[in-house]
Amino acid sequence: MLTRYRARNVDHLLIGYDLRQPLGDIEPWDDRRRATYLLREDVKKPLSTDLLVWPRQDAAIVNILPNLRENWFGLLNTAPAPEAASDITSSVLSGYSAVQVGFSVCLDGVGPEDLQLLKATVQFGGDIAALSNDRTTLIGFDVSDSSLLSGLMSCGYKPDRKSRLAQRWSPMLNRYHLFGRAQDAVEFARVTGERVPEHSPFFAYGIWIIGKKQRNRELMIENGP
Image (cartoon, rainbow, N blue to C red; front, side):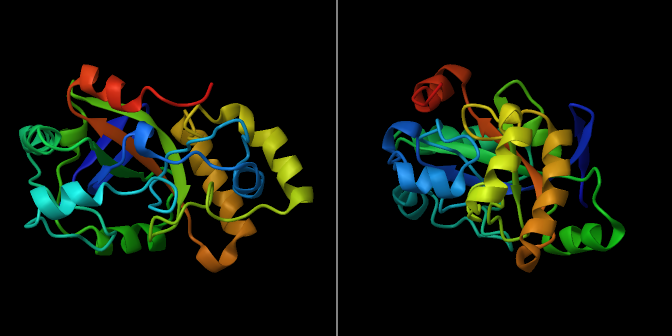
């Protein structure tokens, strides 16, 4: 059964988990890449649903969690119980520096056909309540297609159009180059669908850091302004 959860006045659907590199392990983007792909060029280490932006911690996946299946999104199917996510985080972090991340898709503004697409791809029935406990931190919202390719950070901007988009949208982006409000991400998803129709539709995805807050601060402390 697919479970909705309402956070910050938006309905979310849990789509899976992953283990990503801590900020200290991520290579900062050079000037050319930031100029091509980011609306806020002062962010040197953006975070995203997209593995091209926020790489997976492959050693932890291969050596610690070999039996976890990937779902259609390429994310991990962990047990849906909230405590299961914490247990996995503990086992991984005992030997590896990795950030466990939960991903949800925001359902507000999603049309009936696109909603059916999402429901067809989310088959493991993860309980969104796993992301609603006091061991999780919602760090922002990305805008990506159904393969988690980021339309916010992986679909290059032409200079003339980027200037207009940056003026309108960059004040809404946080230090991870994520939207702070789901409603803004939902609206940008519509704009991105028109800008990059070959990857449409785009959706707003919540990114949740799972685990002890002190440990998360240590893993996530290094970033730009």
